[in-house]
Image 1 (tube, rainbow, N blue to C red):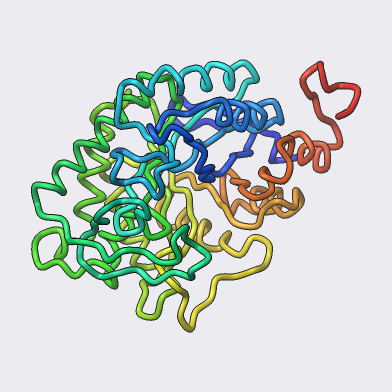
Image 2 (cartoon, one colour):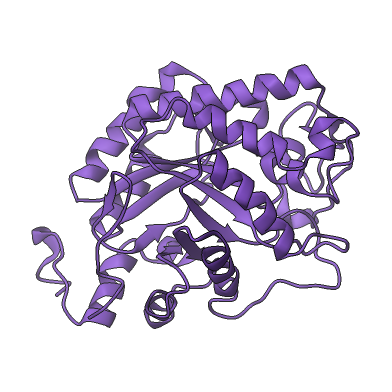
Length: 348
């Protein structure tokens, strides 16, 4: 039996299959108000029609200053809730569940007048990776500002629940604010938030958890390793993850890197290169995990599931290329698929 087609449940979240649409920024909020528009509606609903079990909407900022760019989604205002609800309601019509990834870009906020972070250590990026060719140096947050951001995460989570999302993901990977605080190479604070690198993330988890229904799972995305010279290894990430699990995280979405330019260590460029990280999290934490990273070949995704390396597989670029990746993958693996009736003459 194909594992990719089997249902999956964690708390009250029941998925029809093991396929996840990974969050991918669209930079398409033309009014720069953080509110999703028709582009986002078509983008996400088409993947639900395409057979995806869980759609995780792109990195969504808890504050205007925390966006990567001004074209990003936001969840800092109640005004945005109806637009999200419209998308979620349509996604649900196809048996797909909806999640949202809430975050703060920290020192990687490209359009912020003054990026902030745990410290004033700048981030190095390739010129082609940003709109302006470089990033402004960050300013270190003070304690009061840290507490404000924790509250902003809490408020954004409350709005996500109100909009009807089935689960929430915290973005603790790829060099954004939560990741920045847990990284010894980026966080050089001398107060409690520097001496205890898990503290900020732990407090965010508890704050978000406090406004979520008890049976709604909380997901956290983490970078298992860093690629910058002097970056942390997987044992550090797992140590952080244990704290976050105890604080209320129910599932980890395991990625890597994103904190700056790779040094001697380079990210893999082969299929499933991050799957061993997912397995390490799963074994160490005894908790469900999502694997991500070059899994768009259906047989590779199925292998990650069948080998029990991960519980779910997240597809990113593969779904940008093919909105119906889910249906096509199920057909390739199970040799039988049930598409929406409107498409039954073409996908069967």
